[in-house]
Picture 1 (tube, one colour):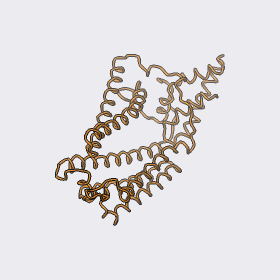
Picture 2: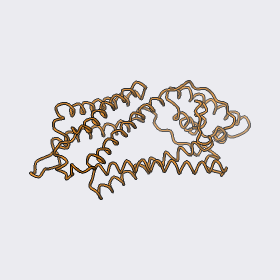
Picture 3: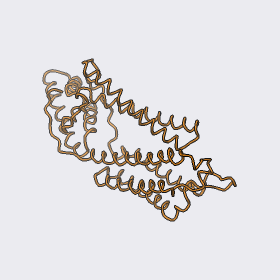
Picture 4: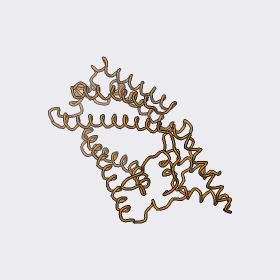
Length: 328
């Protein structure tokens, strides 16, 4: 078999949980070899036999879904993979760009950090909902009207290249996590020892209440150190259900105190609002800004917890079975 087969097999097995991949890969290779041998015996040259065999098997992700008995349905299965690929690609490009643009625009216009964060979150949610609705609607119309579309045919030319499947594939996630965690720890220390805000007398004003150094700021720094250790463990061993539970515990240990401290009015330095020109009696200080901060924390924590359990689910699964090859 050539790299064309390797690319097909990789494109198939990457979509199933890790425990199932070792069983799925030889099954698909055997399936391809049988089909190629039959075509060679019928007189096809080897390259053409391999390409035609892969074309007959069809989209590798659809084949893998049949093996693990995972339904591919939107309104029907024909366009599911094309819908999901397009939605995922567009969302990963459009949502971050539009959110960042909304945040910058709000800051330039209002100079209100809390309101800018709330506006950026609202923009992200709105853009995501609109993308999902309109892209889904287009595929529903295509499917219901029978209009020929991208799901009508598949060829080996669409196969991706095989990447390095070693531990290095998790390295970008590790680096991103370490950079973010170190930056957060740096911000906690910076706001106390090198604050950029000054009061009317020219004195430095930390963002967080200095009283928090008696317990809570060391607590958050310790959590960040634990998160660094956790990121390294995930990199070395991969996700599991137990690590997903640990991830849930770490997130709760951060989110619950942070939200409670904000609600009780013990998070910000009492002199900080006046130093930055906030009217402490204005409703937006305790309302919009507070809601934006709490919502941001809850959204980030919820997403991280859900992503951890989804990763754990992808890393576990039922035994692989060989599907029937008709109607594909």
